[in-house]
Length: 316
Image 1 (cartoon, one colour):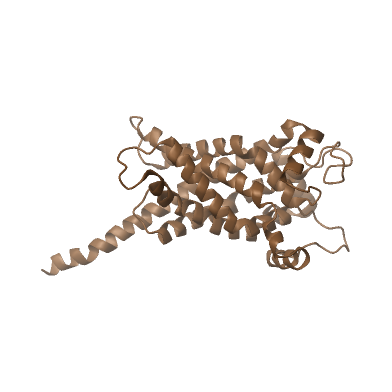
Image 2 (spheres, rainbow, N blue to C red; image 1 turned 90 degrees about the vertical axis):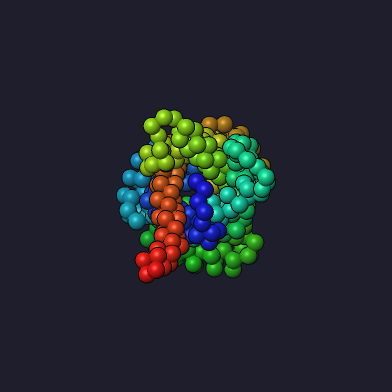
């Protein structure tokens, strides 16, 4: 995944790839968030699905329900802050990964990088990136969690920019960093699972005879990254979504223990299928786009660097 491109170049490549992947897979993410926020009958407070039977059932059932009740474009609710988030978070976490990894192993290191070093680098870059991008994540979850208001009832937020303004006005500037603790835990863990596993799986695949640094390798490594990310990050992802989408919980631990007590341990894997479907697709699209785009930028840079030399030789 390493290319001899400047930090700004890698940031631009990864930000573009992350935004493209986000737009393509946002309906799955919206479905995942609705399933995670849906309370069981024993949750002890009113919420989506808290009265009678569950409103949302399964990935495609949830998508169909949202499209039917709120319109097809509701599946892309939160797309603007989602793109804001991916531009900042996606650009920083990948842009910083190679420099941080190089810092950890030291300039004198020779040979393969250990899996531990890859995981540590990804943990750090994930935490740094989401600390910057948390306000965009909060607004995205708020807009996704907001069901269509009844006829005549005022909507909570008109759009992304109104959501930023309303949250700051009503709850204070620091409210934009609500859920920062579980969000750092979730994104550091998932980033470690994604980047370290992608890096490691790709290296392993390239050692198999017949495999090259091709689109197939990137797809397989991306699917592996998505699977590990969901398995490891699902519990903190559920807590993060509930903390950001509902003021019922007093703290991260309060949310964790109330969810465990009222709904059982399997509640932390609620929405696992849409989460994996979304993250698997997201990682395939993102890494495939990033690899292609970064490769194009790298080759363009090489051509641009060699062009004056070629011209001089031709005229010499």
